[in-house]
Image 1 (cartoon, rainbow, N blue to C red):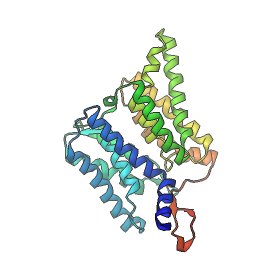
Image 2: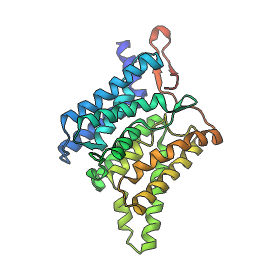
Image 3: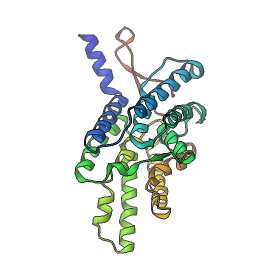
Image 4: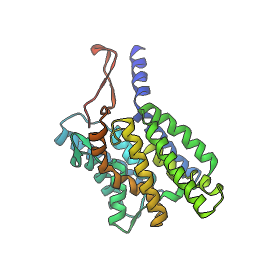
Length: 285
């Protein structure tokens, strides 16, 4: 019984478990409520390539035990947002996503959000792959649903600040644009209910391993991503502007960390009772 309680305690304290459960649920909602056309091979390719790449990199580069949780989150994000008719590109996106964690690093911290990196690089290079932010539409019920789920994940990871800062900055820009153009306030309010925007705010930019270490830095970073995303979406008329903004702004995180400082995030790890019934911090990935 004590072992079961220890296991439940470990599961409840790691934000990755909540994110995996919620992203999996969103995929099912997309399939059965929004009628997404999601080929089974795309799901298997994303999951298989991310887990396989992580297993090889853990064994031959990091030389540590394989942990499937982080690559599974990347796989689920790719499944939600990447669309392609090629299984090769689905696999390539997964390999690039996880591979970027081990290759593109600065002082022990990977620079890019893995899913964002794989998603954007594949969609920019190959015309047969694209980002699909519009599939979620914009509706109050969906917005409230995502706000509730996103609040759970970002609260567990202690990254709710970057999510709210992004949404607040983006809302201010949308409202300012509406006032400038003389549009009714209902237009920016409707735009803020975008399912893709809320998924991005709570399940991508909030990644604690790739956001700035200090809260001040995260607020600056969120405002920067919102501004660049706004410029791309309304200046260049690209509906995936906020997703493209993250990969463009990610290289500023090392500079923000250097200027603002802060404590590096590490996933919680449960130590078995034989070693003490407590949590310790894992080494950075």
